[in-house]
Amino acid sequence: MSKAYLVLSNGDVFEGEAIGAFHDTIGELVFTTGMVGYLETLTDPSYAGQIVVQTFPMIGNYGVIEEDFEGKTAVKGYVVSEICEHPSNFRSQYELNKFLVDNNICGISGVDTRQITRTIREQGVMNAAICSEVPADLSQIKAFAVKDVVKEVSQKETTFHADSKDKKFTVVLVDYGEKKGIVRSLNARGCDVVTVPWDTSAEDILAHNPDGIMLSNGPGDPADNEYCIAQIGKLIGKKPIFGICLGHQLTALAMGGKTVKLKYGHRGANQPVTDLRGNRTYITTQNHGYAVVADSLIGTANQTYINANDGSCEGLDYPGLMCFTVQFHPEACAGPRDTEGLFDRFLRMMGGERNA
Image (cartoon, rainbow, N blue to C red):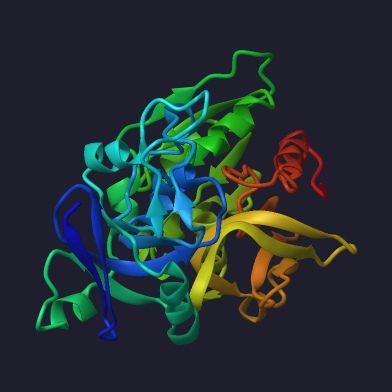
């Protein structure tokens, strides 16, 4: 393998070996704590614009299984301690490095991912480059910003996903960078899904005469998406609405709330979330760098879930408006299925239970 460098915007340099496609890249450096699920991470559109560090020491040991893909890959780069060259799994189709090459993802292995993670945790998310030579000037790395990524990852045309079983409801899913697990979860519950692009107007969404509206996950700063926020404002109260991740944040902004960038975000399949309406804590899958400021919605929304580690907002209900949203991923790909019952709540709401 050829030599490669991970250069952080604070000046730290980590020398390793190049993996994947051979080219330089710049992105926002983030870490994810999943022990498994690297395929779902690499195909999650919410990672658009980011260089992903895997904290688990060996990645690729069960190969590549295309059935497990969540979408089209959008990561800017990939950082691992060790990449497995000889996977062992009955479902494996080929090795991970081939996937990286085929999808033009450059990466680096053989670096101290523990130290990189500590740096991000202590100093906060920062920019970085994966390159073949250490640049003398870091200005280009420091100037990078994740912009217009929802437009980049959202599908361009409306698509239809009909359920093969008995149809119960029709749901319009607004694609800000959706994971396929959302469609699978709805289809499994008897919902036909109409997936529309990010810039579909509220009027066109309602023209499908849906029983409910799903607002998907997605990448980037939620406040950048002014058009999306305006359309959600027109939809609130018209139909039952369930928002996930970026959909949760955009709904809060549409209702007059605020969002804030977290120091290093929540990424992985082991994030604890406490239900404020009971005495239970769930383990959830998450991937986000921003959070809703719950206090900015006092009198408008009720906070339903908080992150058990840092107390940040993980869920909101909007009384009387047939709308609830969560920051985590109830479709859990990859990860625990503790919260998949939220899809059942959405179905009850579409069925007429206003207090579901």
